[in-house]
Image 1 (tube, rainbow, N blue to C red):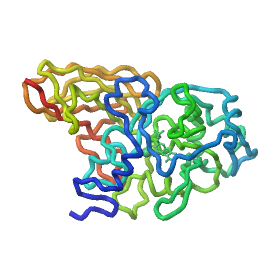
Image 2 (image 1 turned 120 degrees about the vertical axis):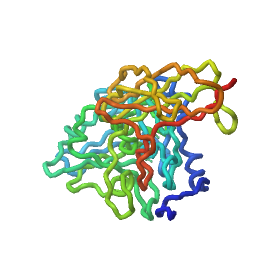
Image 3 (image 1 turned 135 degrees about the vertical axis):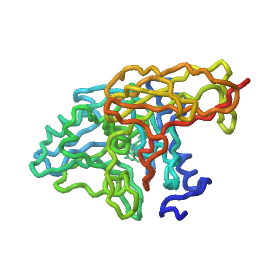
Image 4 (image 1 turned 180 degrees about the vertical axis):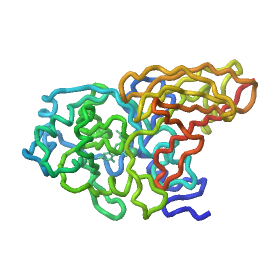
Length: 360
Ligand SMILES: Nc1nc2c(c(=O)[nH]1)N[C@H]1C(S)=C(S)[C@@H](COP(=O)(O)O)O[C@H]1N2
Ligand SMILES: [Mo]
């Protein structure tokens, strides 16, 4: 089979993928045991270089099609009303390597997720203070990081519509888990768009610009879209598709990470989330989906924070089995057994499969 340009059918990983994987780490799945992901274990996705920012020189401007241009220092941001929100963030490319052919990009398996307590100031009042002009249709958020992508020099930038910037839960965050943002998470300030895939949460935020025509930047118009072929405009990714993950049971073999669990069984646990609605159901199977066992699912601790789930699993005998888990949200969205293929390898929320050896 001929793989489309930018994808491969090879089981082997390229140097390009290795270089990306060595920079952008995932969250080790055993860390799913924490309600809030400790700083340093939250996943990372950085397109270009991590900018070095001198706080005394940094400002955030709100400009473009607005009545009143604003320029804020970090102290100005901190002086504004502050909120803290627990938010689960996931990269739109999570699950990419499970698609065939696979997109040549950051080779995530399952681990591009994390949950943090983000502190910052709500975006909507900032925008209201600047006052959007009547003909403003979108607001563009630009980071300090620049690089070359698809042959073009650019800054990382994403837009939100008028309606999206009016949401009361979108914030300009300057703290994670009670600490100033570390360089890799967007120091000194970043956008947080709860419930959406991570690409919308622009890091190293330096300008917020109202525009009168839809933003056509690369990260908006080309990347982060579901498409089957390069020529298609595609549909933009927004909300996080429903998913659950389990803490890998038992102990791993080094270096394969294959799991070994005792014959007596294992108390399975993990987290479940969806950008659309609370998760209402998590099921587990060791029978290839022929029968599913219902897990307990905790209520969401916050509107866009992952939910803990658990269930006791008793193996039917010694030997090789595969454990799968599947979540369903209150809107009826559930996880497919196989990911829905698309060119960029996005939103691949197929059920997690964990091969284990049940010991005698
Ligand atoms: N300025 C800027 N913002 C960015 C990115 C980036 O490369 N540059 N990556 C985006 C993507 S694709 C994701 S998934 C999230 C990851 O945030 P984290 O690294 O803090 O987990 O940041 C988003 N914001
Ligand atoms: Mo991402």
